[in-house]
Image (cartoon, rainbow, N blue to C red; front, top):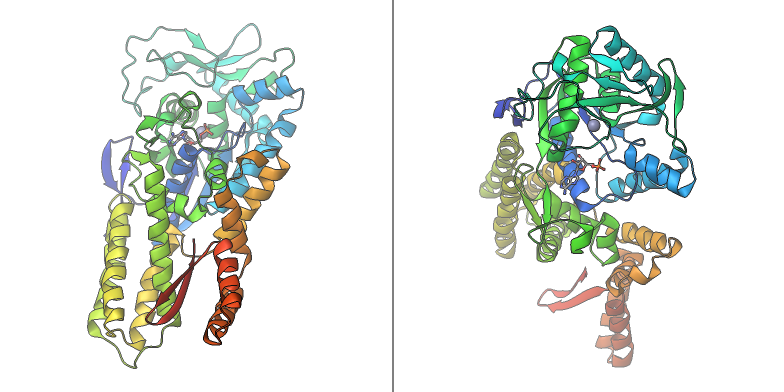
Length: 494
Ligand code: AMP
Ligand code: ZN
């Protein structure tokens, strides 16, 4: 089956086929780097990451570009407030975004920055003026004339027939239903960053940035344009108006929008005290893999309600998957193969693929892998898994992880980085005891833990209970959970 994706433009789930052979050209609106990213931002970035991972898994060659908005109203304002240049102001948050993306398993796209494309943006405005779809105002700003683009509103399905001709707006973000001519280029203001260009001094508007960078990287028409649902209007509507007015061609063929995330049932906001950056959650002691798992677990067009209970559940799910893989890797199995297990593995791969092809139904794909885990664990307990069954089951896990990316146990070092960052940023008071424990446990390698457990067992058998108790206490203190089972001592990290 081909991939089916919802396209905001047609308001339908459609078969996805790229314009050029086997190559997908895709652009995602990236972060505005005026602060650290919050979990809502990362819901969107992770959904787009899953989409690009699945396109690759499906055999497409991918040209995937994301912008970093390092120039917009908020950045200009904050840089001016702090008396630093725009580049100085954003450097810290750009670094933060790259670190956070790596921490949460996002594969790095080709990144482009607004500040590196200013002359191209000025040239774009000049061409729009030539076509008489943009005009200059007395102060040296430029606006797009939306009355010149009758299909304005086609993405957001807003009806602008009543719009007031010539009414203008110069802020980057606005949510008024009445459309207005929007600023392509803003004249310099005292104390604010500005560039000297072919159309005069000033700076680009946010909407222009994405049109220029996406077309420069991917061509006048490309396959997919992605972002959070809040970007449909005005940002993407304005991108379409500018780009299509210039080229006369369809700008992006398919529009992929991710539904907003709620926190404990409410809109996330600083005033409600339910606003979390990724780093805030790690400081509380949550693992990056649990956060990623939770953010991948709801299909991108369904409302995701982020809760701390859900986060704990996600941690358990990741642990189960990792333990299952461990069991398959280290176990000793009788020779031969069990046709039932072979069938289970290949059916799971098919079911995951079918789920993801159905508009990226991540929840169903997770359901399929957990059915495999449940059935295979029972078969393992009953001694029904044979040597040749482990390979197809590990393959199913691998296919799953190519998209979900939670199996590698690298939470320890990542959490340590956040702990160190907090200490140097003056946020030491926000480091929870849980994070300290997790970092301590992460510092012990699996081999160190195995050795200590062997020593503990040897001491116990030699009746040196003081020694065995001390070793157990040391491991527990480092966040290692030790269980005595009929098959001997088992351990896991908390
Ligand atoms: P920004 O850094 O504000 O430019 O946003 C970066 C991306 O995060 C955009 O695609 C936004 O649409 C998206 N976004 C912002 N808030 C949320 C949220 N609560 N849930 C999902 N996506 C969001
Ligand atoms: Zn954009």
